[in-house]
Length: 139
Image (tube, rainbow, N blue to C red; front, side):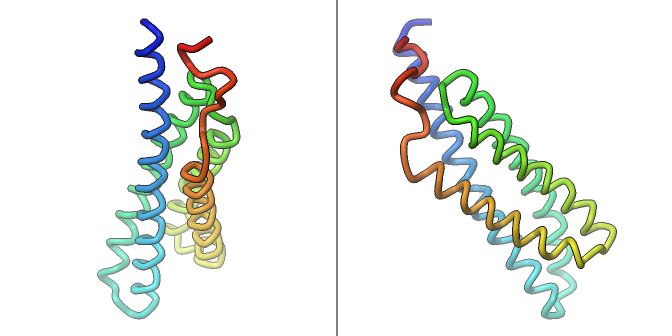
């Protein structure tokens, strides 16, 4: 591959991370909304909360994979990959807790997950993700 193609790969990975963090942030806030509706007595919201929780877990797995590829190939920061993988594991635990109705842990963990997803969103969108010192294709 030539240098411009590698630069395109870097830009693609950066925008994939940004797009996936945006989707995860919207999904996380939506998840909290469904939880609130269920706690207010809308049992239909429980089904939506369950389905959306699985979607958030899958989305976090995709984000963690893209963040890891960006870290390894495009010199993106390791913290983004580590944070994404941590949130992915937390989402998996959260799904199990929710389906087993262990709400004393499920609710606070959900708050931490949404907070973490929003923090990741802010960090990924706030500044440059890829270090200018060693971008792909410009070595």
